[in-house]
Amino acid sequence: NAGVTQTPKFRVLKTGQSMTLLCAQDMNHEYMYWYRQDPGMGLRLIHYSVGEGTTAKGEVPDGYNVSRLKKQNFLLGLESAAPSQTSVYFCASSQPPRNQPQHFGDGTRLSIL
Amino acid sequence: AQKVTQAQTEISVVEKEDVTLDCVYETRDTTYYLFWYKQPPSGELVFLIRRNSFDEQNEISGRYSWNFQKSTSSFNFTITASQVVDSAVYFCALSESGSARQLTFGSGTQLTVLP
Image (cartoon, rainbow over all chains, first blue to last red; front, side, top):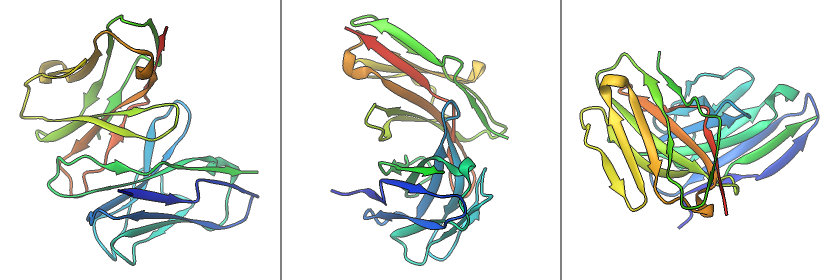
């Protein structure tokens, strides 16, 4: 009963390094999302995908790239990490119809030094 | 643009007290969806409830109840007889009738229930 699985759970990077966060869901959901959570600001949408091979920008996309080559996976990339990207990252998935809730992973805590 | 405001940043209550968490939203859509999520200290996000804009019926689930009022654009959450395990950050979120149902979250309310 995995649901949404995020890898890794914790990571520390140096400024300028690159990395990829992996999100995998086993619920056959069409939609997938990446959010970041910063203190006092709730969750903000970075990028999302409405299906395999499609991606779109959310509220705060700068500095991130995404790919959805397989329906079950949604990757979030940081090409050149910056301290401002220190945050907790959450992946979520959902399925039509439109009122279905999003299911979240447990989060990835990322620190950029 | 859609917006969700949770004006209460932190609330502390003593166990068994009732507590209401406020949520006010803004949207231009006539069809939209409202959600509440709970984030316990362990960090995961737990879905609690959803409400459609065309359904103003209030809902009760055990010690939890929700009051949805379109006239005041509010979707408030009440916990009756609070327990220590209710301590968490609670988020209200809004989804408009767009193509991807993106959620716009409020900034959250940290609820602490003291024994």
